[in-house]
Image: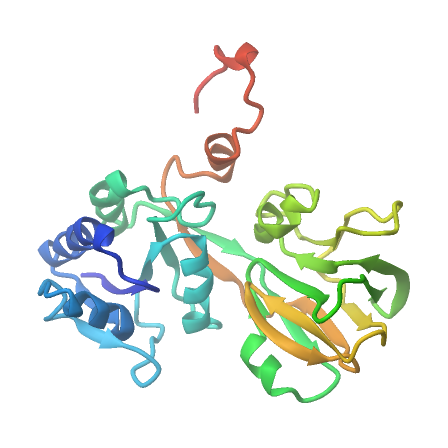
Length: 302
């Protein structure tokens, strides 16, 4: 018997069929099912009753390592939020995609019964993803909240139309000063996110690297650079303004310009449930139309 938790951010009427299918499938297998309180309460407000008998979890009743999985309903953003509930715990995430692209949430709506059946039979592998740990040179309440990221850290200008300058150091050795709208420190997982929009390369999830990508750089010779994930990156924003923005997986805080940020590999990894045929390579082809070319129509299908 599996013990699972269900997490969603905002319940929508379009979720009803997929959430009820998920819960019914788990109940038939006599699984122990918990649901995130805020999400479950949103369901109840619509008058639906299929979540009434589920156990709940929230900040007062947190998750622990006894859970076999955390199942998310939404998109990749929902998975990124869900990792705030897990952090160092060894609970893997199974993402059901009710959003758009779905690089992390790879189970599509029509696949829910088969995906849950495979999960219940333990017919899957665990894909471990490196995470960022971000520290500062001062004790900051904002960074107690930000802390870790699966995708990326982005620093950006706040109250100015001009660019910002960022001194970057690798293992305490000066790399360069970026003049740009911002700077992204990305994991391989995050390489298909904001960094990709800023002309950064795609990295395979199992590569042991980080990626530094400037946002709209004014240094025309500043290009994205791939570094070892054992590197400690230190960032100092030049004192042109009083504050700058720091974003970890879209969780944003305003930082004093005196704050130096130190980015390193976290001492734990994110665990994602990978079902058969839900590979990163397949996702590249299906979601980003990787290598789409009429000459490829006779290419072998995997």
